[in-house]
Length: 123
Image 1: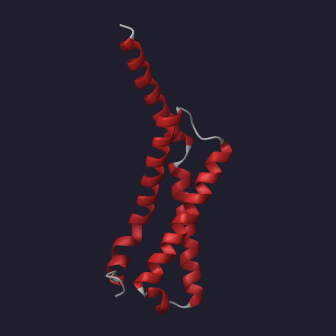
Image 2: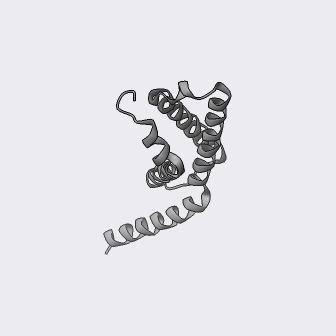
Image 3: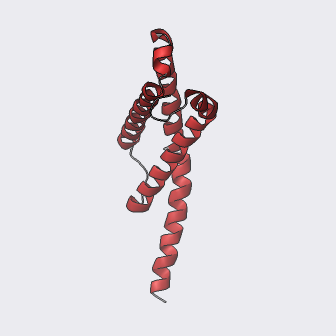
């Protein structure tokens, strides 16, 4: 156990929660972007966000493996496979979270809210 991180707890809790956390983080980021800019991502912005988010998540995943001490107990080939699978999961979660399906719904709701606020000020 290194720095208070128990590897057995990470294994038990990290199976499905990683995808959910990444998806939630992408939703929140996209929601804030839509609130501030009142538009969806352009194609270039979308791929930049997906790429950077996936790289950051892979970095955090590698840090957790290193800090938990389980990185030393796993063979090198297995460690590479774990990082690659984590990268694929991160890519799928962030690309789903930044998808236009979620963005369109949020943008429509935000535009309706803004229209209500604008019409109330002129009454």
